[in-house]
Structures are given as structure tokens and as C-alpha cells.
Image (tube, rainbow, N blue to C red; front, side, top):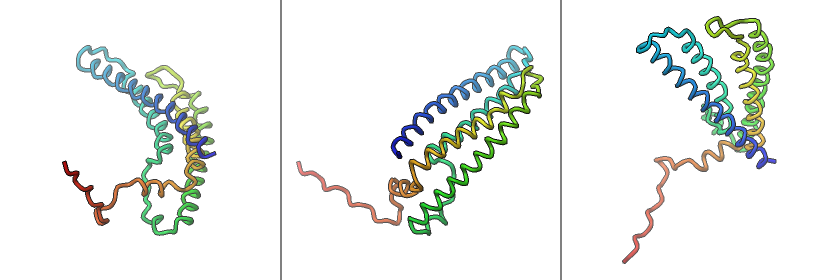
Length: 183
């Protein structure tokens, strides 16, 4: 089950990363169009700045699930490190469950928020705000799915894996260098 969760998480993350990369590419192109418009052609296009804002919001919110997949979000583990491994694992699982509750709440609230965007217009883009507001429930749902997969994959062992692969601290004795081969 853990291997299945790891594979599913990895595949989903690859798809999300591709979408985030495409959004960032579109953002860079959009900003360059705005710069070229402002300083060279003076077309006075009204939409590049607004579109850039919504592209950035979508990319940033979708990237949350990428951070969850890799467990790259900031966390203060100084207190957790003082507990025995069994308690630490239980606390990490509890934190994942609490985060899952948060993302579930954001998803639920975000659905209503996105629906309210259908009644609002982005005047500069002459479009409904619903697709832009939909970033919240979409990102929350992806984050919740990735959190469930990461929870099953790690089962609270993410700190043990991290410390096992981290480099030795400066205070720990370093291994002696290998003997020189005589030629």
C-alpha cells in the first residue's frame, strides 16, 4: 500500500509540476508582453498585469501540493526531536490529519467562493472570475489528495528518513579517509 501511495503521489506530482511549469511560462510571456507594450510599442494593453496576477495565484496555489509531495514545507522540528520515535511518529501523523482537515475545509469553502465568482466580472479581461477563483478549491483538493498519499507513504516516518540521509553534523566525528593505494 505504501509503494502504491508513493507511485500515485509521484505521478500526480509530475502532472501538477507540468501544469505549474506551463503557468510559469505563460506568466513570463505575459509579463514580457507587458514590458514590451509599455516601453517599446505603447499599445496600452489593459490585460497583462491582471492576467499575470491570476497566473501567479494559480501557479503558487498548485505548487502547494508539490511541496507536500516532497515534504518540503517549512516545519519546526526542535520540539518533535525531543520525543521518542513512537511518539514522534504519532504526532507527525496527527499533524498530517490536522492539515488534511484544513485542506478539506479550504476545499469546501473554496467551492462556494468559486461559485460566487460566476456572478463577478473581471472588467479588464471581460471574463467571469469563476475560473480564477477556482484555484482555491482545486489547489486544496490536490493538496488533500497529496497529503493522504504522503501520509500513507510515510506513516509519520518522514523525519527518520530525513535524518538518515542528512550529512553528519560538524560536531560528529568524520570518518577517516580511505588508505592510499600503493602503486
